[in-house]
Image (cartoon, rainbow, N blue to C red; front, side, top):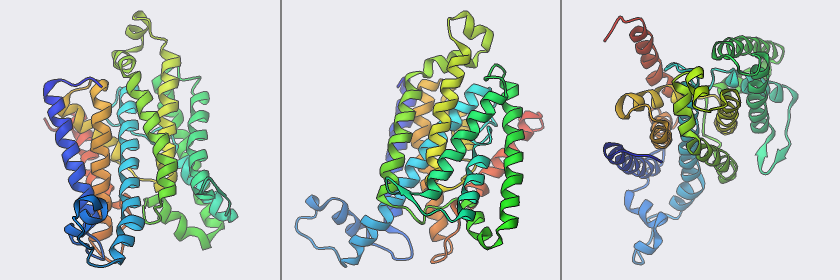
Amino acid sequence: MFFRKHQKIVFILLLIVLAAAVFTAATVGSAKVPFSDVMKILFPFLSKGGAVSHNVFKVIILKIRLPRIFLAVITGMGLAVSGAVFQGIFRNPMANPYILGISSGAAFAVAMGMALGLQATVLGMGAISISAFLGGFLTSLVVYFISGGGKSVFSLLLSGIAIGFFLSALMSLVMYLNRNQIENIVYWTMGSFNASTWTKVAVSAPVIIIGAVLLMFFSKDLNIMVTGDDSAKSLGIEVQSRRLFFLLVSTFITAGAVSVSGVIGFVGLVVPHVLRILTGPDHRSLIPLSMVSGGIFLLLSDTLARTLLSPTEIPVGIITSIFGAPFFIYLLFRKRNLIP
């Protein structure tokens, strides 16, 4: 990580906000748990022998809320980091983790899995989650090869859009032919953490964290690539191989996030773009800052999703879209020079 003085301050403040968000999310919900009890459950060595008000609080915190909180944070980290890298690769502030058709590939695979009634589990992960991961990852590979091996950023964008529309059409066909599964498929495409478990955290966290560390390690190369292919080549960067590396790792991270949360939009668009404005475009600092900020954004969104209409839960993708869509419109108007 490469932080200037003001970036270090921002990073520390973000970590404090993340910690506060975690404790807040643990206390609120359909069953409100006092903050003192949350502290006793999470830090029993600090409780000085004090007992928790109700034993059921331990079950709520340790088996229901904490897995959900950790999964939301990890997923937000993955989506934001992927968004930062995609925006760098495509040199476009409106790029996001789903620009290569990843979401459409994952959604189509899930629709097929539900239509076929897949029930198998691998490493504690259900067949639907595995289908989402494979669908998203394989789609990105198809897009990459159709575009001619990533030689042109423009070809990658067009290929991703075309494949995304094609897979969306196939998903609609699957839903039409399997109307009894429409509700489940639609709910998954809106994103949710209501089925969070420690197993999902254990499976997704290594994928996202290891991928993010790899991206940070090569972030200097990404900085050079942002200046343009010709400039990067003149500085000794193998542009095509590096682009493939960044695409594969970012897609791997996104697929890992999507497989446990469903399709959640705008996290990878809003978070890294705001940070570019506030802290600068250097990916050596942008990637770790995006990780923490993405975790905060998605955790707060999920907390709102499960508390606004409690005990009814809103799909978290709706909350992120409510925040993200106006920001996307702002970017469009700014790009057209209609606003400063």
